[in-house]
Image (cartoon, rainbow over the protein chains, first blue to last red):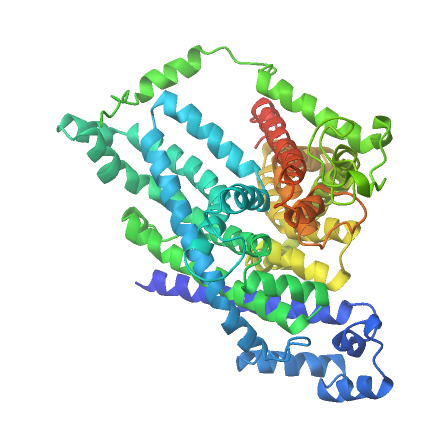
Amino acid sequence: MPTLARRLSRRLALTLIAMWGAATLAFAGMRLVPGDPARVIAGGVQANATPQVLDAIRDQYGLREPVLVQYGVFLGRLLRGDLGESYQLNQSVSGVILDQLGPTVALAAGASALGFSLAVGAALLTAGRPGPRVVSRALEFGSISTPNFWIGILLLAAFSFRLHWFPVIGDGGLSALVLPWVALALPIAGVLAQVTREGLERALGQPFALTARARGATEHRVRLRHALRHAALPVLTLSGWALGELLAGAVVVETVFARQGLGHVVVAAVRGRDFPVVTGVVVLSALTFSLVNTALDLLYRLVDPRMRQAAL
Amino acid sequence: MSAPAAVPYDPVRAAEARARAPRRRWPFRPGVLLAAAFLMLVCAAAAFPGLLGHAPDQVDPAAALRGPGGAHPFGTDELGRDVLARIVYGARPSLLVGAGSTLLAGLAGAVWGLAGALGGRVVGEAAMRVADVLLAFPAILMALLVVAVLGPGTRNAVLAITVALAPGFARVVRVQALVVRDSAYVRAAVNLGLSPARVLVRHIVPNVVAPLLILATVNIGTAIIAGASLSFLGLGPQPPDPEWGSMLAQARDYLDVSWTLALFPGAAITLTVMSATIAGRALQARYEGRGGG
C-alpha cells in the first residue's frame, strides 16, 4: 500500500519536526530567561553563588561558546538520547525520567481504563433512552466543568480523612491509586461519554440497525455488536486529546495526592527553573503524543474498513 | 434484571419532531438565566470586590479554621481570614486569567490564522507549520514551559495560557478564512476594484470573527480551569493575593481540620465554568449558521 507508507512516513517526519520544535522552544526558553544563565543554573540570585562557582559552571556547561554552537551541541546530544544533567537533582535527566515514569504510567493507564469504561458503559446504558439520558448528561456536564484537583481534594476529604478507606498519602499499593484514578478519570469520562452516546445514537438510527432488529437481534446485540463499532471512531479520534488531558491531569493530581511521578518532577523543575528536566519531559511528551496519534491513524483502518479504501 | 424497553430511535420521527418544534429566538430557559445571573455576580465581584465590606487579608488567629456560619458565612482559613471575602476578591484574578487569556489568544489566533490563510505560500505555510508543531504536544506543557521561562505570577499565567490556546484558534480561523476567501461576495468585492486592505477589513474579518467569538466563549471554561490549575500548582497569582486555585492548594493542607475550606473555592470555579459554558452554548445555538460557520 504505497499511500499508507507515504502517510506513515509523513507522520513520522511530522513527529521529528515536532520534537525538534519542542527542543528548540525549550532551548530558546533557557536563553530567554532574564539574567545570567550560569546564575540560573546555580539556583538563582538568592543562591548567591561566588564568581568562582559561576566560572566553573560556565566551563562545565560550555556557556562561553556562541549561542549557535551551544544549540548545535544541545541538538547533537539530544540526537544521541542524552538529555543532560538536572541542575538541581544531581542526576541525569534520563535517570530522573526513568525513575519517575513508573508511578505516572500506573496512574495514567488506570485512569484511562477507568475513564473509557465509565464512558462506554454510560453511553451504552443511556443512548436513546430519554430518562437515563438526562441524568447522565447532567453528570457528564458536572464532571467536565469540575477541575480535577477539586475532585481530588473532595475525594481525599471524604474517603481518606473522614472514612479512612484510603491512605492520605503514600505511593505504596493499589489502595493509594484508587482516588487518584477517579480524580483523573472523571473529567475525561464526561467528554468521552458525550461523544460515545452521540455516535451510538447516530448509529442506532441508521438502516443497518433497523435491519439487525428486523432479523430479530436483541437490543443488547444491536448495541454491542453493531452500533458500538460505529461509535468507536469518533472516540478513537478523541484518544489523542484524552492522552493530553491525562498528562495535564497527572501533573495536578500527583500534586493533590502528594505522589511521586513525572508531573510532580516537572512542577518542581518549573518552579526551580531546572531547564534540562523541563526540556526532557517536554520532548518525551511530544514524542509520546505524536507516536500515539500515528498509531491511532493506523487503528482507524482496523476499526473502519471503509477507511482502507479512502486514500486520504 | 429488568432492562427497560428502549424506544427504538426513529430518524424520520425525530426529524419531524425537530421541524415541528418552534424555533427559539432567545433561549429563555431557566438554566441559561441562572448561568447569566451567576456570571453577572462573578463579574460584579471582580469589578467591585470592596462592596462586601470585608477585607480579604484581615488576619484573626483566634477565629482560625472556623466552619461556615455566624460572622463568616463561608468560614475562615488557617489565619482566620474570611473565606467569603477571599472568594470575592479572588474573582478578579481568576476571571482575568480565564477570560484575559482567551481574549489574547483569540486576537493572536485571528492574526495568525489570517496570515495562514491569506499570507501567500511562504508566510501561510510557515504560520501553519508552526501551529502544527505547537499542537503536537499537550497545551499544559506549553504553558508550563512559558512559566518556566517567565516565572510565576498572574500576568505570566495569562501569557502561558494564551500561548497554549492560540494555535488551536489559529487553525479554526484559517479554515474559516479559506472558506470566506473563496466565497462569491469576496470575489465580487475584489472584482469591483476594492483595495485588498478594504476587502480584508470590511468583508473577510467580520465573517471570520463570528465563529471565533463563539469558539472563544465556549472555551473560556477550559481557560479558567487551566488558570486555576496553574495557580493551584503555585505558578499563578502569588500569596497572599487570594485566588480560587491557590486557595484550594492551601485548603489541601488543612483537610483534616476543616474540609469546608476546600468546598467554597472549588464550587466557585466549577459554577463559573458551568455558567460560562452554558452561556457560550446558548450564544452558539443562537448564532450558529449565521456567522457562516
